[in-house]
Length: 131
Image (cartoon, rainbow, N blue to C red; front, side, top):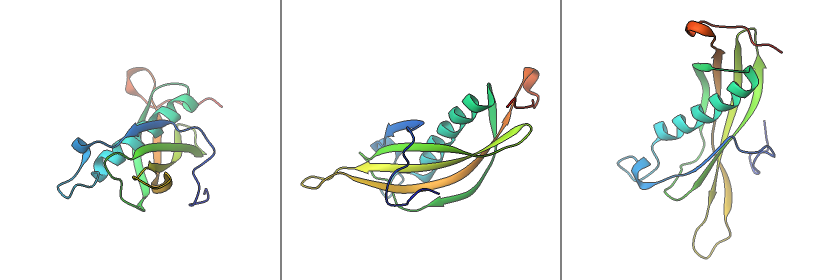
């Protein structure tokens, strides 16, 4: 696991801005929206490593550490946790860059989780991942 005080040194797999349309009824960014961003990032990462189409088959060990607010720049960083015969497990760590008037921008780890993807071949059938 990375240092919880500083973002991973890897390039972000996905970067976006949290917008007002992504909030829950309390004005915080909806957890489902954040989960979807992480799934997109993990899927893109897994597809590159698996050499083709993948599908999400599981999400485990999901932790929400801090809230995300409108205007935060959201960055999802991925690393391979495990590669099996047909699946790949990806650790997705999400950080925000939060800027507030009169303060220096902050980098804050907001969530992380393990996403498992299966490699899909012709006809939507599982396929082996070539290593």
